Length: 68
Image (cartoon, rainbow, N blue to C red; front, side, top):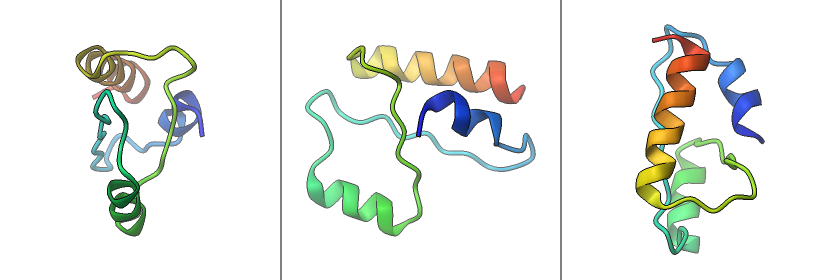
């Protein structure tokens, strides 16, 4: 899924948690745990961002799209 599509379907009243992966990526074990908990996996695009930059980008886009 892409980030825009996921954000456009979030109800502003819903609780949302965004998990940013480490710069080396999630391990297979981490991905399985997140999948088992029902997390949706999305991409921020082809550009590789530092973890700190990805968090700022995700928080800004979330605030803009969902409006909280």
